[in-house]
Length: 131
Image (cartoon, rainbow, N blue to C red; front, top):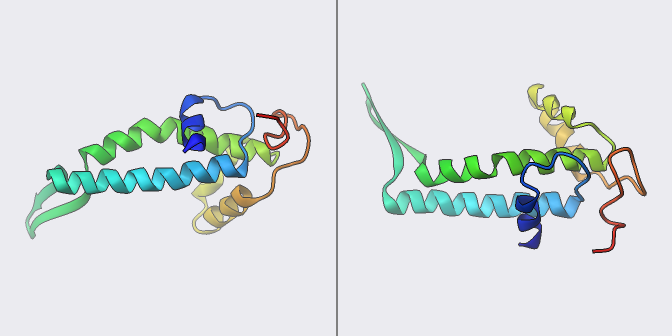
């Protein structure tokens, strides 16, 4: 949980580096909280319903989920960019996701890659900094 809160405290900090642990713990808690928001939407009856010619279409998402996603959008992008910085890549590598399938696989490989040892042009290795 401390890693999730650390990302939220660095709300829009796109400079520096983020360790694998920081990034993946944020992803884990983000999945957990997103699921909780979806459950709350279902329990409260706030999911989106759209009437169409073929009947009503119910979406699993609702207002709680949308508010949560909007609240963590900027911190999520920031930790993603800092994670790319940690392996010596620019944040613009985010655009690799535009390439269907291959882009997502490549980004996943980059995100699980071990940190560059020592200092790089984005700062000190977060694993080597004493907390």
